[in-house]
Image 1 (spheres, rainbow, N blue to C red):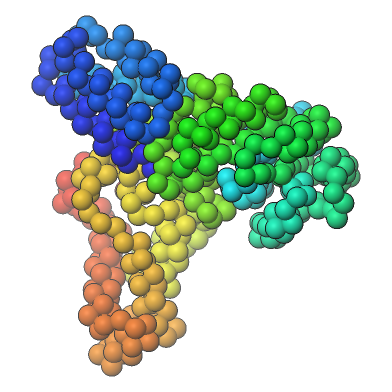
Image 2 (image 1 turned 180 degrees about the vertical axis):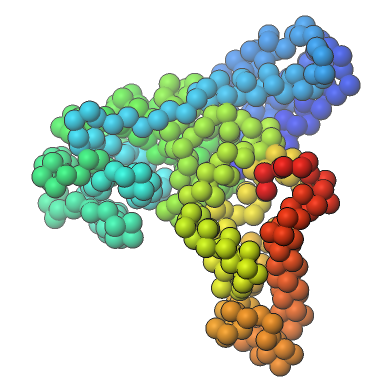
Length: 445
């Protein structure tokens, strides 16, 4: 996400290294490169012009004070403007004081609209709300079936009917929600391949009859400015309250994220970062600006970890580590949890400074699968007590997972090294370990 834009912005901002002041002369070249980088990222032309003008106005003549360098100052100004461009702060979902709260979801076919409904329902359910999914895409039987399957996965009821009147279905769903105490109604509306007058009228009629407190437009971030243009067209008909950008984990240039607020006038509320139901994040302008400028996003990383790790299980694991009882079953559980958090490249990119340090390192997420295959080729006793894995057992494990004995040996060695490190940390050697890593005493490991 934003890798190309990040690289080009970093190159442009390097021009200020060693400068004592930001001047008309040294900012001109940098602004040209930033302008080019934004346009290549498919940011709206008017948005680019205003962004460049605002950065230039704030940067010109700024004195470098104290320990602050010119390059640090320009990075701060660019970051502040990026944050402003994307909405300054997180835009929360609004709920009705009198339930149920109706959230209507609109978008073109293929944008990830129905999947987003499932992701949102899952997220709200985890927060203690009682959502109801409503299948109002009456023109595509596959969409109704997809919503039913999603509801089954996340244990959320789905209201679907055989009739072909989307307005009546939505109204009946509202009555159902009131009767059975569902406090949030998520309405999945019909999508088309392009903007269609019949579809727009149907969505508008649903809106008039169920009076949604939130009307969210889902658009594919990978189509850049087309997504922004389509969002604007929907807003003119529906009065949107927010935008959802999907496929932000793909080969997106980032233009939609940087343009949508300025062009449509409505904030981005969520971003989809993958196909799995847990791959939905609230949109934080400051965090996205940090990612764009290669500063990482440690808060999102922590939130992802917290959402995946069970506190009680973590306490049990800590106790096992203290007693030196950590085994391959525990290791496999942790591996599965990390996989749910995202790709290694994405996770590394959220740690400040790590993305630059490991820029040319290739991360093979398939390696997780190979490690899993080796562990699953072990017997229950071998996973619980790796010390019994002798030469013949290693040979059998390698044959069972279709790998070489060297691969099995490497994993066993890495596992033992990791256990030694854990043991050292739990014997009061934490500060010695951190010193060896060059970390300050008391660093939060």
